[in-house]
Image (tube, rainbow, N blue to C red; front, side):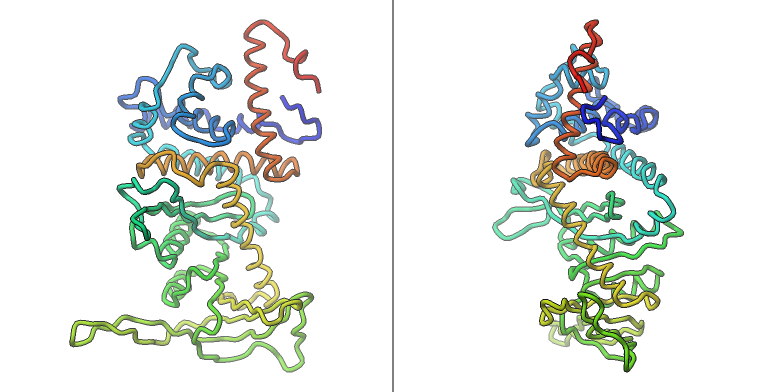
Length: 406
């Protein structure tokens, strides 16, 4: 049911998309439910889903209170006599198989992605890629990336197709503090899952290594990466013809060239020290430099290995990278991913996968009903609660239509 008559899709319809058979199959064929009397995988899935959408701030205490809520139990047909303590939830997050939630996340994404039309798939082959960190209250993390002051944080790199998060990698070791390592692993991991992909990966300055770009190029991975201004390169050829229009609407085309890049390689000395030696990468890339008419002094240097698309289209592709910044803001402000519910790496992975699953449901709800992020989150929470209350009313022999008049 939905109290919003103008909506094309309701929360009850969305919940029906969650593959209940998959939840049961994974529970039976994995170790997710071993040694658990109450908090089996299916119950943890629904507990986290309901808690993320229904609370302003998430904590283990919030999860304990949510499990006691008769509305929650009615919605997901759970035993109303069961109880659970916060300490049990904490321990369960630590030990439950995070791969269970990863498989559910990937299944739900593939299900929604398979419903894209051919035109939409071409449009959503632009994969925005970026990383963010969770560091609030992270000083107690045993496994985390250290930062100044002794605190630690967890980094996660997300791939976003314009509608949904299509991939995620979670890092807690120091080598992934560098975006060159984190983003390249995220892209390579995503590419392996899509053998016949036609994706173009859009990234910011975080990935600046020419050797990483060479690796992408050698593997047939197309990319558009914003480079630092004035990085060293050798121009082989300019693609701008003598009389070519360089004023492309609001964009000024300053350079469009075939180039070779230089990369620094640490070289040991006889005294045991190292120095950086610059070497030219053999692969050839395309350097596009553009600026906005209103701010011609602020240039954007874009590197790509796509030589077919017009320069303006490449520049437009990079502008779409901002979508992932908006998505990160949605995760942190609306879905509580600005702090850690669990300080254990396994628990953190569970929470990240569950938050992305919840985000997908809300984003589909948002797109289908043509509403904004905040409105979608608020109405989603209202509908899920009203649905549960209707179940309670029916169970008591009443008529929910007398309560929820549309």
